[in-house]
Image (cartoon, rainbow over all chains, first blue to last red):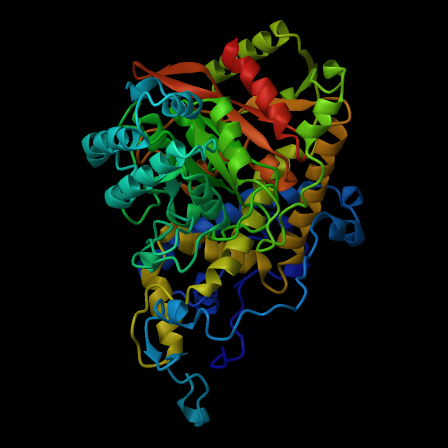
Length: 128
Length: 480
């Protein structure tokens, strides 16, 4: 997504994450900034509702902060729990085999391509 | 035929004995669907014509002696599992018109056995919820009490089987989405070991948690359906290798008692808080039955398991926000036209996702965001390892662990509008997903609410790849 402007909106409005003030870590979530980041058009009314809901959910999940650090495993042992599986890069299917079926699902096509709006703007001033 | 008493196992015998044809059987279920689905709303779409064609095909297989356990068995499929050429919407507006371009591996396996697909079942959007109230197409109702939810997210599947609109169904379970609907409707529901069943063609929700599994009327049926769909799949790198089959090992052992489960652990301190007293009473009765069946009941401690719900509601939304990034209005699904591509993304996603999906995407983006990932996502992963260790330690001294499946029975529509009150539904079911171990819900009697008997489930949890233990203990509970 090359139309990205630098993320300058703080996701937190108030609390400094490094302050160590864990009891209030979930205060001041900037829902509008999150909606921007996740490309979600959300009404002002819903933003207002989420502005209350998200902190209350975060306050609930923050109970994990009470797990003492000395109980936690090292990152190395964490790596063993979930393994990344890579497939060998071999035996590709014949080019074009799935072109039609995949294009038939696309909202807009041009020949054998999915049609999209211009992604990179030539004129910097036109960027939003 | 009386479909109210049928199981896959008994239907198999009847079909093989030519008591009725697969077409007769499918027609009987289609009749019931026509009668009951308008009220229950278990199915989003019913495929009468293709179901009858599949049943005729199954009759041909039976006539030729090509009989598999599921040949001619009418099944319901959750709307997040792909069947080539069929709409698969995950009960979301963003995929309302999406037709699957390929078969899920489980679909392929069922087709090769000659199973019959009756239709696709309702669910919470993208499997996010515990009631089907998050479906973009309206909720399903619990056939036992239509003022109550059938559970979720696989609530259409549970409602279909409970109302005899299918002989069995497939669901998916990320934090309890098969076991809780099974518990709420008096069925058996299995979440297999992580990696036991291929997720190729299952719409991803929480990729480190999701599993496909059966909802059925008996433990035997659950085993039949699980056996049909399990196995290593080159298209899903997270599936486990097909190691020497446990049941084959078992046949080589003369001393059956050496591998029969004997010791069952009960994490009492975890259960006491927040569980309805009458559910605890049914649970104690189930323990007494197990004792009578010869099991030793042992109190165990799972010190980090009480953190499961919090860990789950960090890891799951993180994975949801990542997985749902692919719905951008470009390659498939809903696309809301706009001048700039960025507006295509935001308008499509804003219009296509429902409230709970939006909530979890935002939550997930937050816990993954720079500056907060350490305090939330990485910390949650570390605590998840402790939870996993709790189970590993416990399974050194017990063969299985039991809990109630849920702290309360089926609730009424609209009664859990606060998100956290809905999330608490998953308290006993999320630990198995976080640890990757298999868990089953089997009926353990009923509790009364507003004058109605409501079923409740016993959850049995076993070590990795030991579904056989769940079936053994589950069958003992069924018989007791």
